[in-house]
Length: 254
Image (tube, rainbow, N blue to C red; front, side, top):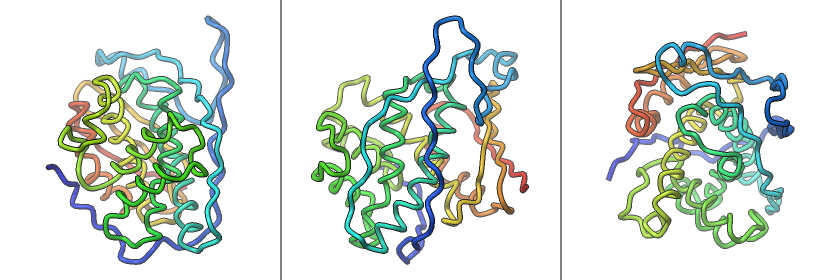
């Protein structure tokens, strides 16, 4: 069973103000010009190197929810970090659309899992990813849609430690297509989590250069983000294995 040797901090996430959640992209008629967005579209280098390109940003499908959690500093901190990870996960989803080829329904599931992935800290650091999964699975206040809840919970579980595996009962019970989607989104969620490793919301935006043999994440940050870059190298192992491309990262402080 593959592990990412995650070295989470030994204290619970500190409470802080929440970054704004990503805005939902408006739908557009076929053939119409794409609206301007704050997230760059995949570069033409991908086309030159032979990767699929020209895929329009998927339109997010809303999983209507606002987590209803007790007034607890641990939950507050987990959700503050979760909203930043949600924003980064949405940016990665759009930037890497030519690789994962998933639709807006899966983007909504990824964003929900990103927001809630660390709520398991309420029972301590150890195995908090599994605690997060259990809390999401059993609490309709977190994800009201009963059909969506198991997938969101499973994605949150895979934000750290073991990779998705058919040895895991819940993952094995999925259809072949859903297993593929969960695997790809778990790779993105692990990256998004790494990009807020310091819990300071340093990364403000990102773009991706998709080449034939590698993917470069170009980060814009409030300050140097050396720890985020280091953790991306560690937690990017699933991404490299799933997509068959070397992952590298650069950071440009504002």
